[in-house]
Amino acid sequence: MFICYSKLLKVSYSKQKDSLVFEGPLGCIQYPITNISDISFFEFKGKNFIYIEKSLLKNNRQILSNIQNIFQGLLFGFTKHLFLKGVGFRFNLPKTNIVSCKIGFSHLVYYYLPKKIRAILDNPTNIFLYSFDYSTLNNISVGISSLKKIDKYKGQGIYIL
Image 1 (cartoon, rainbow, N blue to C red):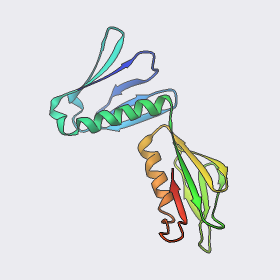
Image 2: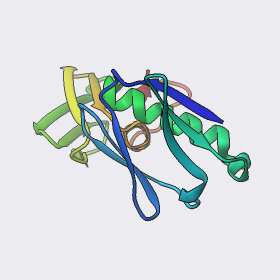
Image 3: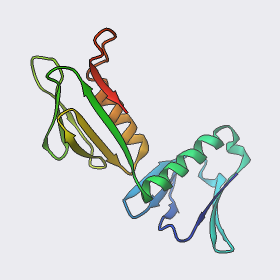
Image 4: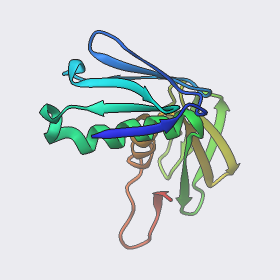
């Protein structure tokens, strides 16, 4: 299977011992892979190609979608929108890497963000998370939403939009 992309995309790649390293305008992502020898890079008629051998056939689609997500993330980035629903529920950003949540407990709940993720507070009930790494962004947004499960009857909780 092939992944084709133009040289105009400013993403460089390299093989390391057991991972692929992609560097782009927004950052650097290291993608671990077990059979690194089954992946090859080549150039043909001004376009770059990534070729994945058939020995990785079981995981081919997953590897392809992960690499495409890496390219999209390094060029444009990803955003997740978190929305609080409930009386008195609030988000706050006391520091750049900390999200504090007032979600119906008798105390504030703090969630620490990794350096790859930026939080933007739209209003006290809406927060946007931005990152170039899709898997990390998805894990963090699910982690924040699991702080307060959605109540079936009242509809209160943290929603991912």
